[in-house]
Image 1 (cartoon, one colour):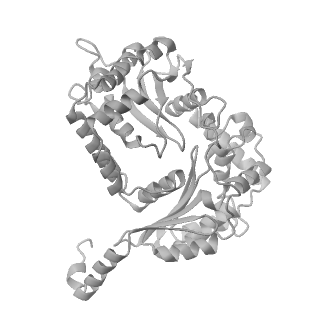
Image 2: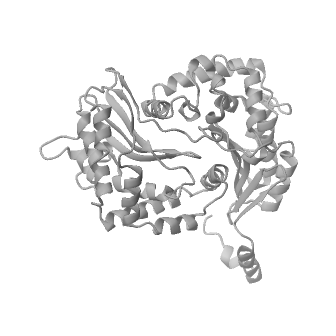
Image 3: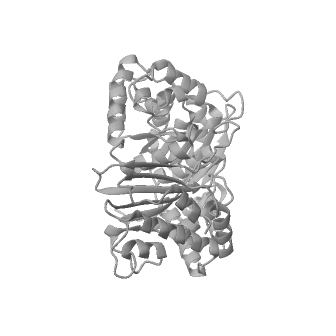
Length: 465
């Protein structure tokens, strides 16, 4: 079936028309409607499917502190019936057209997207509009989902990588919107009511904070007309919106340590203030992190790794055993700030100071310039490869477009990204490390056997090296 006779049976004139069309019609197009809604599409020739979704620049960060968890609560209720479709009718409709529908909430975004046959795009956008703007939010459904969300909260509490990063946000952005969890605290989940949900929608679901994305076998002008048809009731914000208002988030160099002897391993996250989505050094941060690397004991690569930190984690030095189970150099970006650092796990009887010292030494290596051109080029190549591999279908491309548009207001295509990454030099990485790492406040979050962690002041002192 894959060896279709396309090239042999398609008339030459048709092939020329197709080639001409591909040259004159850009694959990626955007249009902004009068109500501020951005419509963006990317044509993928040769496919009969499409991913269509709505990306909203509002997540848990936009929650009212008194009803934290509302954004996530809404995601659950969207599929429980609308003014036009009962829950049963909605489920049957989705099943009948073979629709794949998903939603998620993050700290800054809420996303609803579908994957479907291109002939069903109109029906898909109708459903998306219905879910977003006409949910019934019935009291019975609210109470039912409250129990589901509380159960989900219990499950998240067992996911220690999630727990560590939630605690990290709480201490880093204490008493700030980014410090709140996505699900919200249990005591507030129990009190969220219908009016809280209505208030969130009316406050945050605005045209200038939303983007309708279509990728695959999508005609842009048709997508624009459908957006006008189904989202005309969405209003524009009274004032230009910015995440967090006019005040930039304040990074606090602080810590939280939770001693839990029941855990078989310890989870630790270190962080300094990182880069926002639109920061000029966004890609430099990724290249620097690539030099630090990522390692997992289960993979078996260690002593031969090009990353000195990975070698240390795997071998612990001559005559020693591994001092970590895994580690990951990470960057988490937001509209106006970010976190950057190392997350690692270790056996409960490990000496955590050994790995903390190794991390500080590795950061010191970046600051001192003791890195090679080969390390920089290798990291750049890995970054470019990961970007390409992450854009392998219509859904991942839609996610890339939607995330960029609602968080930055523009989209860098892969070619633009490649140019920016390729332009990064060894000097850029060294300068970046001295700007972002030297003498900067550091935050720490740890869960497990934390007795061998060095003091916060000792770790902070190591940032001056």
